[in-house]
Amino acid sequence: MALKIRLARGGAKKRPFYRIVVAEASAPRDGRYVERVGTYNPMVPKDHEQRLALNGERISFWMSKGAQPTDRVHKMLASAGLMAAPALRDQPKKSAPGKKRADREAAAAAAAAAEAEAAQAAEAAAAEAAAAEDAAEDVAPAEEAVADAPAEEAVAEEAPVEEAVAEEAAAEEEKADS
Image (cartoon, rainbow, N blue to C red):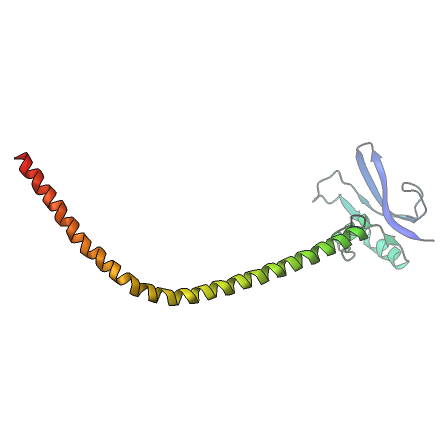
Protein backbone atom coordinates (compact mmCIF):
# COMPACT_ATOMS: atom_id res chain seq x y z
CA MET A 1 0.00 0.00 0.00
CA ALA A 2 1.67 3.27 -1.26
CA LEU A 3 0.85 6.23 0.94
CA LYS A 4 0.83 9.90 -0.04
CA ILE A 5 0.63 13.02 2.08
CA ARG A 6 -1.51 15.31 -0.03
CA LEU A 7 -4.22 17.95 -0.10
CA ALA A 8 -7.93 17.09 -0.05
CA ARG A 9 -10.15 19.99 -1.13
CA GLY A 10 -13.11 21.14 0.84
CA GLY A 11 -15.03 24.40 1.25
CA ALA A 12 -17.54 26.15 -0.95
CA LYS A 13 -17.31 27.25 -4.54
CA LYS A 14 -14.53 29.88 -4.90
CA ARG A 15 -13.81 29.54 -1.15
CA PRO A 16 -11.27 26.68 -0.97
CA PHE A 17 -10.18 24.96 2.21
CA TYR A 18 -7.77 22.04 2.20
CA ARG A 19 -7.15 19.17 4.61
CA ILE A 20 -3.65 17.73 4.59
CA VAL A 21 -4.23 13.97 4.70
CA VAL A 22 -2.37 10.68 4.52
CA ALA A 23 -4.14 8.60 1.87
CA GLU A 24 -3.53 5.68 -0.44
CA ALA A 25 -2.08 6.78 -3.75
CA SER A 26 -4.97 5.18 -5.66
CA ALA A 27 -7.72 6.86 -3.57
CA PRO A 28 -9.62 9.81 -5.09
CA ARG A 29 -8.53 13.35 -4.21
CA ASP A 30 -11.46 14.11 -1.92
CA GLY A 31 -12.20 10.49 -1.10
CA ARG A 32 -11.22 8.13 1.69
CA TYR A 33 -8.04 8.84 3.65
CA VAL A 34 -6.12 7.17 6.47
CA GLU A 35 -5.55 10.16 8.75
CA ARG A 36 -5.88 13.96 8.69
CA VAL A 37 -2.55 15.56 9.72
CA GLY A 38 -3.21 19.27 9.09
CA THR A 39 -5.15 22.00 7.33
CA TYR A 40 -4.41 24.72 4.80
CA ASN A 41 -6.64 27.77 4.30
CA PRO A 42 -5.46 29.96 1.38
CA MET A 43 -8.19 32.54 2.05
CA VAL A 44 -6.54 34.01 5.17
CA PRO A 45 -3.45 36.30 5.06
CA LYS A 46 -0.02 34.69 4.75
CA ASP A 47 1.10 35.71 8.23
CA HIS A 48 -2.07 34.40 9.91
CA GLU A 49 -1.59 31.40 12.23
CA GLN A 50 -4.59 29.50 10.81
CA ARG A 51 -3.31 29.55 7.22
CA LEU A 52 -1.24 26.38 7.75
CA ALA A 53 -1.78 24.07 10.72
CA LEU A 54 0.29 20.86 10.86
CA ASN A 55 0.65 17.95 13.27
CA GLY A 56 4.43 17.49 12.98
CA GLU A 57 4.60 14.31 15.09
CA ARG A 58 2.07 12.44 12.95
CA ILE A 59 3.67 13.66 9.71
CA SER A 60 7.06 12.36 10.89
CA PHE A 61 5.45 9.07 11.90
CA TRP A 62 3.83 8.54 8.49
CA MET A 63 6.98 9.56 6.64
CA SER A 64 8.91 6.94 8.64
CA LYS A 65 6.33 4.39 7.42
CA GLY A 66 7.05 5.36 3.77
CA ALA A 67 4.47 8.06 3.01
CA GLN A 68 5.67 10.49 0.33
CA PRO A 69 4.47 14.12 0.23
CA THR A 70 3.28 15.65 -3.03
CA ASP A 71 5.26 18.61 -4.43
CA ARG A 72 2.89 21.22 -2.98
CA VAL A 73 2.80 19.58 0.46
CA HIS A 74 6.59 19.17 0.33
CA LYS A 75 6.91 22.96 -0.09
CA MET A 76 4.54 23.52 2.85
CA LEU A 77 6.47 21.12 5.08
CA ALA A 78 9.73 22.81 4.09
CA SER A 79 8.33 26.24 5.00
CA ALA A 80 7.27 24.81 8.38
CA GLY A 81 10.77 23.37 8.93
CA LEU A 82 9.75 19.71 8.89
CA MET A 83 11.65 18.83 5.70
CA ALA A 84 14.44 20.12 3.51
CA ALA A 85 13.34 22.36 0.64
CA PRO A 86 12.59 20.48 -2.58
CA ALA A 87 15.08 20.75 -5.42
CA LEU A 88 13.40 22.79 -8.14
CA ARG A 89 14.60 22.60 -11.73
CA ASP A 90 15.28 25.82 -13.56
CA GLN A 91 13.66 24.53 -16.73
CA PRO A 92 10.95 21.88 -16.82
CA LYS A 93 11.68 18.76 -18.84
CA LYS A 94 8.69 19.38 -21.09
CA SER A 95 10.04 22.68 -22.37
CA ALA A 96 13.57 21.41 -23.04
CA PRO A 97 14.50 21.69 -26.74
CA GLY A 98 14.32 18.58 -28.91
CA LYS A 99 17.32 16.67 -30.25
CA LYS A 100 17.21 18.24 -33.74
CA ARG A 101 17.01 21.77 -32.33
CA ALA A 102 19.90 21.06 -29.95
CA ASP A 103 21.98 19.78 -32.91
CA ARG A 104 21.16 22.88 -34.97
CA GLU A 105 22.08 25.18 -32.07
CA ALA A 106 25.37 23.32 -31.55
CA ALA A 107 26.20 23.67 -35.26
CA ALA A 108 25.33 27.37 -35.18
CA ALA A 109 27.52 27.87 -32.12
CA ALA A 110 30.43 26.10 -33.84
CA ALA A 111 29.99 28.28 -36.94
CA ALA A 112 29.89 31.42 -34.80
CA ALA A 113 33.08 30.35 -33.03
CA ALA A 114 34.83 29.75 -36.36
CA GLU A 115 33.63 33.13 -37.62
CA ALA A 116 34.91 34.83 -34.48
CA GLU A 117 38.33 33.18 -34.92
CA ALA A 118 38.45 34.37 -38.54
CA ALA A 119 37.54 37.90 -37.45
CA GLN A 120 40.29 37.85 -34.80
CA ALA A 121 42.80 36.65 -37.39
CA ALA A 122 41.73 39.46 -39.75
CA GLU A 123 42.07 42.01 -36.94
CA ALA A 124 45.52 40.70 -36.10
CA ALA A 125 46.57 40.98 -39.77
CA ALA A 126 45.18 44.53 -39.93
CA ALA A 127 47.04 45.45 -36.75
CA GLU A 128 50.30 44.11 -38.22
CA ALA A 129 49.72 46.07 -41.43
CA ALA A 130 49.01 49.23 -39.42
CA ALA A 131 52.19 48.69 -37.43
CA ALA A 132 54.16 48.32 -40.67
CA GLU A 133 52.59 51.54 -42.01
CA ASP A 134 53.46 53.39 -38.81
CA ALA A 135 57.05 52.21 -39.11
CA ALA A 136 57.15 53.46 -42.72
CA GLU A 137 55.60 56.81 -41.71
CA ASP A 138 58.22 57.30 -39.00
CA VAL A 139 60.91 57.24 -41.71
CA ALA A 140 58.93 59.41 -44.15
CA PRO A 141 58.38 62.46 -41.86
CA ALA A 142 62.13 62.92 -41.48
CA GLU A 143 62.52 63.01 -45.25
CA GLU A 144 59.50 65.31 -45.62
CA ALA A 145 60.86 67.69 -42.97
CA VAL A 146 63.94 68.28 -45.09
CA ALA A 147 61.81 68.84 -48.19
CA ASP A 148 59.33 71.13 -46.37
CA ALA A 149 61.97 73.44 -44.89
CA PRO A 150 62.59 75.55 -48.04
CA ALA A 151 58.85 75.86 -48.64
CA GLU A 152 58.32 77.25 -45.13
CA GLU A 153 61.05 79.79 -45.72
CA ALA A 154 59.38 80.86 -48.97
CA VAL A 155 56.07 81.38 -47.16
CA ALA A 156 57.85 83.43 -44.50
CA GLU A 157 59.42 85.62 -47.23
CA GLU A 158 56.05 86.20 -48.93
CA ALA A 159 54.36 87.48 -45.74
CA PRO A 160 56.37 90.75 -45.48
CA VAL A 161 55.76 91.46 -49.17
CA GLU A 162 52.01 91.13 -48.66
CA GLU A 163 52.18 93.47 -45.64
CA ALA A 164 54.03 96.06 -47.67
CA VAL A 165 51.43 95.95 -50.44
CA ALA A 166 48.64 96.41 -47.87
CA GLU A 167 50.43 99.43 -46.35
CA GLU A 168 50.80 101.07 -49.76
CA ALA A 169 47.10 100.57 -50.50
CA ALA A 170 46.14 102.17 -47.16
CA ALA A 171 48.43 105.15 -47.87
CA GLU A 172 46.85 105.73 -51.31
CA GLU A 173 43.38 105.69 -49.79
CA GLU A 174 44.39 108.41 -47.29
CA LYS A 175 45.69 110.59 -50.08
CA ALA A 176 42.50 110.13 -52.03
CA ASP A 177 40.39 111.12 -49.02
CA SER A 178 42.35 114.31 -48.38
